[in-house]
Image (tube, rainbow, N blue to C red; front, side):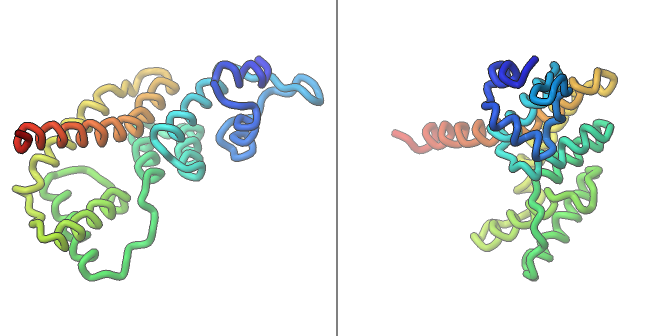
Length: 206
């Protein structure tokens, strides 16, 4: 198909498609003349993947480039999950804050206690440490008993998501399943907020 048809089928403008090609997110088409290239189903699949990450996952181009590089590099499902996690961040340097460093040690201890196999440099450890600092400064205790409902919910969601990934399926299907977990993170956040509003209404509303 020509780029105009690719634009129609993907719902993206020709300018956007050319931008993704320049950014290395989308392979160039096969040149059939000096001014015309042809695109195939793989280009359309890649554009749908990029659109999901950009529009729903709200990832910047640099983060999407990391995921695309892992996809194109032939990474297995476990490595793709790691690539997605690192793309999601946070990727800022750890703050020079003794409270944060203490919280980071607590996060590492929690992960060990739970027996979770998560990389020592997983960005989510830093994200959780920052949350621990904020909770403590608000006067809320951070204990395993207090965290247990969140731990159970997170573990259940993660098991459900990874169970959908068929490592023996064609690579495209595997990648789509793993990338969908980025989008479902937004679903989880939205459902959590709706559930909070409902619980508050049932508990406090007249």
